[in-house]
Amino acid sequence: MISWSGRSLAVGTTVRRLHALACAVHAVAALSCASSDGAFRAESPQCDATPRSLSSVTPAVNAFHTKDVWMHVASNAEPGIIEGAPLVSVDSGEVALDGLRVDDVRAVEQTKRPARLWGLALALRAREQSWRTVHVKEAWPGVVAYRFGADVPAAVVKSVIMTAGHAGARRGSVLVAIARERDARSAMARLAVDPLMIAEPHANLLYVHVAHNLVEYAWNWSGANALSRVALDEPDASRAFGASVARLWQSEGLHRDPHDGRFDQAIVHVDNDVRFATLVAQLDALCAARRIVHETGRDRNVCALTLNVAED
Image (cartoon, rainbow, N blue to C red):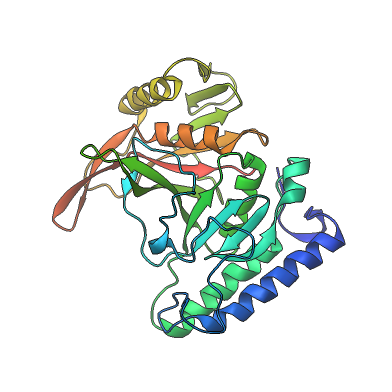
């Protein structure tokens, strides 16, 4: 378990900390290039919307359509994106916020140990303050979108998501693609994935552990009851996992009524060296469990589980 506070916080060497802080200062300075609604303006002569090193990352979520960007093609994602949410992109050892480089994760990639990313944390706090100056009477939504490269290790994924959570962005969406039936082209979609900040006591939980070639899971696992297992090297393994989770939720899930705004919870533990491509496939499979939610006069078919990534 990682401690994010006090002297127990392992952040790496002083050089890396200063480097991250310098990146954050650069990001804060770039906020002067923001328009009145908080969106990044590429047309300003003093604002460079092109990422310093992440050439495949575009400057804003609603402009995220570069052909060279890898994204998982999902079967159970929510279509569309959250308009205006900051985009955190991670690839090639670097972290960008709305296209601007703010942190470096090469040390985390090497050690395979999650750590708090100071540059990203400060940049997200600055983004929040910028938003609050415009939306004075509104509550900060705390929503962020993530885009990870296929080979990014889970240690980095957890570092990014937990850093964002402690920086006030406690609701997240991993960007994925969905295949359109008519032309087979991909469209933007999202999987809601949040950091596990505080586990609800006595909650109705689905325990999930993702390893390289195996996923283990059980409802309200205490260590005494048996875990179900799916070997990920088997054909259609993720689909089989999703079908099993859907059946399990049908028998164990508590929140089924369309007017019930609460959701059953899946806590996902993942080994630090697991590739993001493996992890996101299992997150997608978890949302094979579906339910109907009644919202403002209409019914929506949504993921029956809230997905929380644990920091251990």
